[in-house]
Length: 120
Image 1 (cartoon, rainbow, N blue to C red):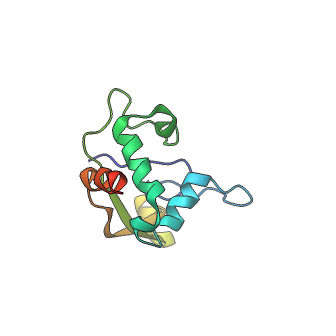
Image 2 (tube, rainbow, N blue to C red; image 1 turned 90 degrees about the vertical axis):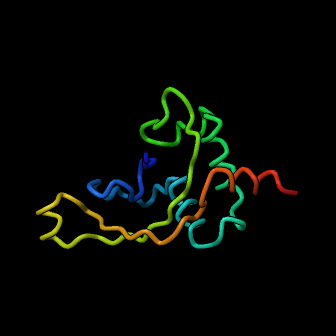
């Protein structure tokens, strides 16, 4: 299973936090806000999933690096995590800035995302 990385937010547990203000990366922040509500209130997330499945180059360019350089994925799901900073001793021992706990599947499967998009 491949985890997609966007340039600025948490994701890679060993990635040092980036400076956020005054620059607020749009996709990064929008995904954070979207996770505060259900996917039905954020249809653009489902559209993002659909474009990833289609291999839309403009959408893949938002991720660092392109996780699907040769062909689009067959399946996709969006996992929602809760992130916390690690303690200094843990960071020194593991090199990880973050610890995370999976909460749920924000979008449980690609089929569900495509179905929701095509529904009236």
